Length: 486
Image (cartoon, rainbow, N blue to C red):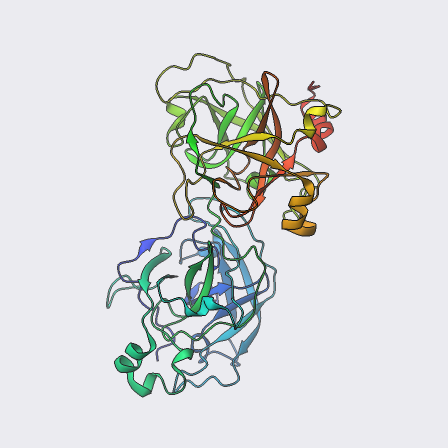
């Protein structure tokens, strides 16, 4: 078998940002892509043993991994680049029979799991799930997804763009008839079919993605269960599931945060004429780095080209909370200072325009923070699991949950002092993390007050969303803006 072969993704489609955050590119001696692979933890990657068989334990060869890149050539310039510290081949790997064609790569640097990428060709980074050995997830026989930088046609060159295809998993009997004993010398359960060499074959089970196999003759993956946060698509713009379209005057505080033009990355809320409140994870990957400029659009009901109907304003300064922790999501809050003042209006012009005005932020001592009734989340998030971001401003209404309920669901990652929970414990209609950075608002008497900022969640519409609690950070907001909110 030619280990340099980039196997075929024939008839594939371009991968969107965050769609396969577990995908990596395996390089030899610099920028020479030889295989794909999958992230199974922050320090380990899973791939096929045949990818490094001819280089392993030989002088002059160094291996590297690129994660978070949608392009093959010079992907290290837009993604995360790490040298491979250790190659662990399966002890029973047999290149003549393709048995146990599996290996683990230990990385020198820990990968940073992110919700979005820094630019046009960068993507989210996160692990794929690996099910337990007794799980029914192994028996999935439906549609599966293969991703990689494989050839796009027979005899063609490898794709420079990350691609994916969807096909059905075939039964063992068909594969044995098709390939005979030369390709299935042991147990049919240890091998499957084709993709980008070393890359993952994943199936969707209960709203998360599980790696079933990999490589051209896929060996089964490790029988280890990972974190419950694995196997989730992390495309920018989280989901508003079961939402309704917002009226022109319904969410005047809503804004869209753009990166380098018309690239919507997050939502946010107007708290003053020149200040926007959002989540720190929205800006953390881009802040203080050359080549990135933030803009805000207000007064638009549409996401694409909203600047044509609303107000487009450049961001002057980004202030992430000094104690923001991407691992625990503590202090996931940020302020955007604008270059010019927003013009408030209660009379939008045109069918796609919206009213513009600020959301209230009460004082830290106010009893309004203890509100446990119905709340509203708005944004341009995806309207269904696996779907695309909505092009129209959406909103949903659900109950604010108690701290006890959230602690039971998320454990120690949920901090009741600085976080608030919203949605349904049993799933159904609700926010799947809302629109990232967007507002959670409650109605008290005749006005709306922002209770939280969308931070994180688990499985789409199956678990409640966690928000950064505005109350806890009111002293910080007042200090940074110089405004005393009352």
